[in-house]
Length: 193
Image 1 (cartoon, rainbow, N blue to C red):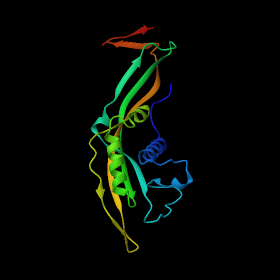
Image 2: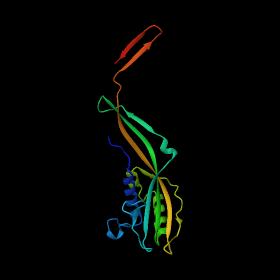
Image 3: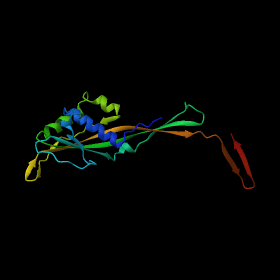
Image 4: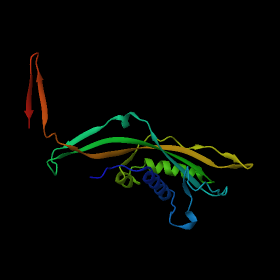
């Protein structure tokens, strides 16, 4: 009875992998290593050349009204007579910030945005992870950045995704209860089994 939820690392790995695919790079090739990076790498942020195309990803949760609603289902067809199966479903909303550098940064950002909005592109892969794009993705913003006396091409944009989550727990049946009826003069115990 496993939960249906993605850990943060799973989300980051999935978005990195799908980004490699969208921009047409094989992540297993040594020449492509580090072309898609996480915004807060544990091992530091190695530099790159002004001519390199690099994508940084940052996955963060978004506080959304949709994330506050729980749907609870109790399964009475339990395997045993001791517990009920309880499934609590809810939505988590994730924002993915894309920061792209390099001479093709704007074109790559536009390609990623288009592909996320294209219903037939990677929809099955997203669905298999219970992720669903929120189709209100703003246009990429070109923001050349001055670094070491040179203007480095940079483009940013963000996309948000809903994740369908199910948490599963066991809830024990109530086997017995004790009811006391208290009147002005006496207490009566009523056992219920």
